[in-house]
Image (tube, rainbow over all chains, first blue to last red; front, side, top):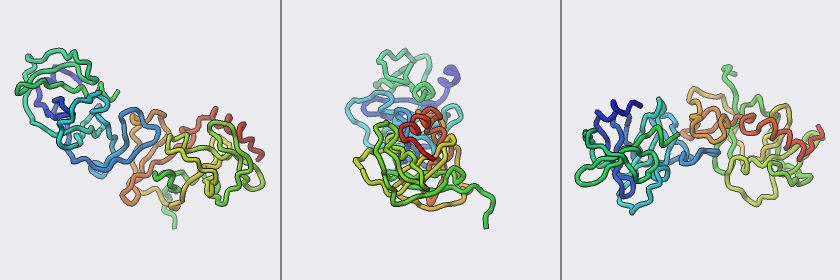
Length: 139
Length: 153
């Protein structure tokens, strides 16, 4: 993904535990309510199984676990963000959606917190927002 | 009358539904007689099949499903993998079906062991994982299992 291009887009901001995460809205296909996840044997870490999306099975990825976010549980509900990663639809487990907003890329800084799948951060409404690199987190 | 579509056997193992290509299946056998136990990791022991002894593989262990202390195995799918005959213990048989139009390529990026499953069938609203037996059991593993189980066929 071209980060320069991506940073000109609007971002979906959602909560994962007590952290705010942002992802490029152009790559998000749909937000769904959390539903039954069918387990798959021999799955890689954080891929917990399959969920149905548009009558098709797609991989379900436990984003909070993969990012290593274990903060205070502020999220009020669990949702699924269907995210396109390299042409493949993946269902990311997320917390509640906060907003969709444009992020000023000049305000981005390097994230040094060591959150997996995050290279940059910014601030929004006085809170730090971490920019998700979806390709990196599922590698 | 057959429509020419591939036939699959759908089975349940530990609450999950799996399918096996009917071409790989020799027989579904019941009332298994475990003639001896194996010390091998992948092999439970030997079972009698058509006058020979064949290995009964520990599929639950291989697929990291719930391991139980089951000592009585009642039903197995007898299959041919890499030219060896194996018995795979199953909990129940759902039946033989035509691979319908609602099947999807398995997203390989999920898998730790690539090509263990190759397709997903949408069967009565439930996802059935299509086993690729040579992907689940490599040739080397099959040789080891056969040695542990000492097939006499």
